[in-house]
Length: 415
Image (cartoon, rainbow, N blue to C red; front, side, top):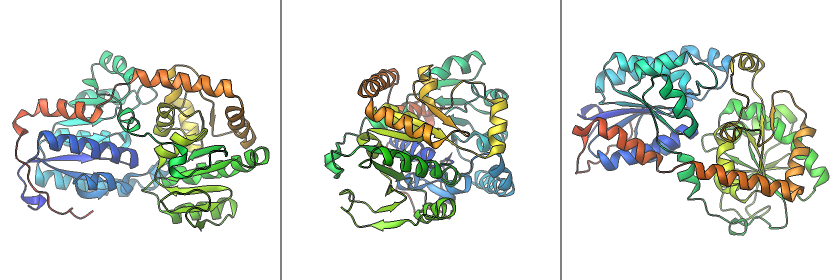
């Protein structure tokens, strides 16, 4: 049945790759509980596979930093108008907005004004900066479905209808059981996983750091192997352009088995070995990881791999952040630990300092093991079943939408 003919729908929107994964898991959990209700919205590859009808793609929202948002402001306003036109036509029973508060706060207000119940999945980090958004959450959002346990006290003290549903990362990581030999990585070589980010702007700013750090570490440990899992939403030509423009290196396809026996496409440049996807698997088999601040830092810690946090943004964004951010750490790992458990190198740092930290974690066995033990303790603090818990809360608010018979889904709409 065409989307425009469906009686019962809900709107769901993700802003980038990690949100797309969350949206897919939630959409599947909701389909189990309300199979007759059709989801539509802003999707990526994972949500498409979960049979969410596309009216826009996450790439339209994949922007980071003040300057980049300002450049794309007109396009974001047009996207908002197009989405609201779909909402006006389909009149969804509810809306789920995932992470991405810069866009979702405005969109949530417009949905609320139309009488659509709104759920924010992943709370905005207003405990770090932008506390003015608390009033928007209280007024325009029916519930905030949070994934970090330390947030609950902050939001409830401010009158926000907040529920900690669990950590989707814990659910995902519990499924990652992999040994280095199973994907062909040589057991005798130190492996450093490199996660520059999942947005084009993040890669452009953080990939040069990885090139510089690899060169220095290789001087001390020539056998070290730097592996970069590339987010599925990033085209390899983007990686090639960044490498050419920042360091003059050429990205070269590597025959499978040349470096390691992975059943995926592989590329090499500047001593970095790139593979498509497999970020959790690469983290799991790495000795150490170098990670751009964000969700990946917590993923890495929950997997149990010692890490170094690096992050570079535009100078304008950095200067604004220095003035408004209220928390002492940039990474979710340190925020959860409440202490500088991992080293953070932000904006102004030397590649040599980062390289020395990588070498320390590789060569100081006691320090490496101590960090792994702290990560295990953090993992025990989190509960799983996030998507199922979030779905149950939504269904409890809309009991009339429960149904027993599944309805076939038509092909995706135009993105």
